[in-house]
Length: 582
Ligand code: FES
Image (cartoon, rainbow, N blue to C red):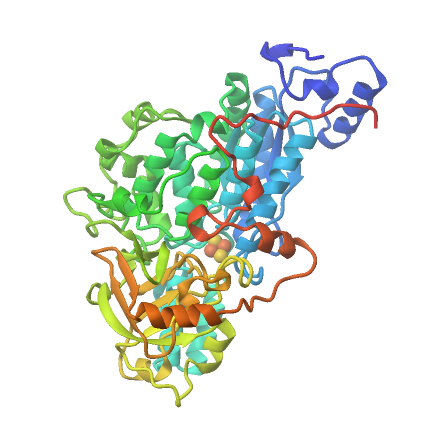
């Protein structure tokens, strides 16, 4: 049934279009309408362009402009471009959080491939959840895939100073709440923030996941941090269109690229960029689609001896555009190549060869050298203990060093609404040594595990000059956030985790160097509280949230749905379609 055509290899799409019968004929006619191609008799790879641009997601809008260059690249290499829409996951507007829909978008990609004549994929990603969603879908579909990013938005300027998205918003909010910013200045600040499309320009989740995608090998070298609107973005779009056609010819699939060694490299680079803690959820979710797993403790181990070299906010001083101008990912990887597996193969070829042609030294100080790191690692650490039996995560590089070992009395909020309502309640006793505990933000509970973990500092403490406190939750935080914030506590309170057993005044012990997070309450008392615990999660009764709440895994397993994870890394591909009359 397949015709090998100009590529000399069987193509998946040939099952649809090759043949003289009425079924193949109708498939060719349908394809011609969308692609305007005359020659659809088989043998030309059909490349799906998974388009996540949307007017509801300003982070992804630059992607729309890149599509013509991608299509041109695909055609010039002999392929047939076919754009299809994928849910756009914008963290700004989607409530309660875009993570609730990451797995749905991944399903969309997989099922679009399963059901359509698609031989390869160009994944258009930018806002932070779009990247893991597309990679998860591509991993499950396992057809050759390459990612094109839309790039970070230009820097806003406020009072002569360039702003990093997210990070400076949180800082300004604290200043505003502390009365250091007038109403007029706060309003002027708002106007400054809306000045261009593209992803957050700090080391947020979007930049982190883009850099990790390049480290994994799922985009062209040097492409993951090209700023939005930069001429190089169009050059890369064209080159990626050409490259995906040759990847189909080579049979280079996600499973060949995203290997255990590639994920090991990605864990190291996450530490070297002091990237978003969200990657600690997304990378296992992507790997899980390929049957690859590692224990949560591996995150701390991966960071030992890895210096932070990306001098980008919130851990450093610069923006992602400056990181790119300093040489981007190839230069960063060159700085650390003695720690990396150099035999991995990506869209750009073998990693050792890619790095051989990259500059050996950073072109400016947004990427530090090994001799002059921003910080000693690990930037991200994992803690375990009686408060987090299955672990929790903290971004050490964005925390206050004097709080990394801290014991203090808990002030407990049972959920986000409770925290918003009572944080500044003058009747609550909150001293600066308190540990703020926010339960009810886990994957099942809300659902979707929103980025609520960086609780604001209570007003009365802000007024006294307090800028950081230990905060603990089963939620996440934005990659642009900072502070001594312990996240992803597992199991979450909503499924009976000990976070839901903490009471006001209980002593909580955090010891990041020792990897400990403990609730200093006697076992007898804890047993008494546990026996009284009742699940009070608002369970949905219809729609996608039902499926999500019933099947979502906890944070250490990546919050994927249990039936989407591959049981092993030799799990057979089962996406072959059944072609019949329709
Ligand atoms: Fe979209 Fe940050 S909110 S990239």
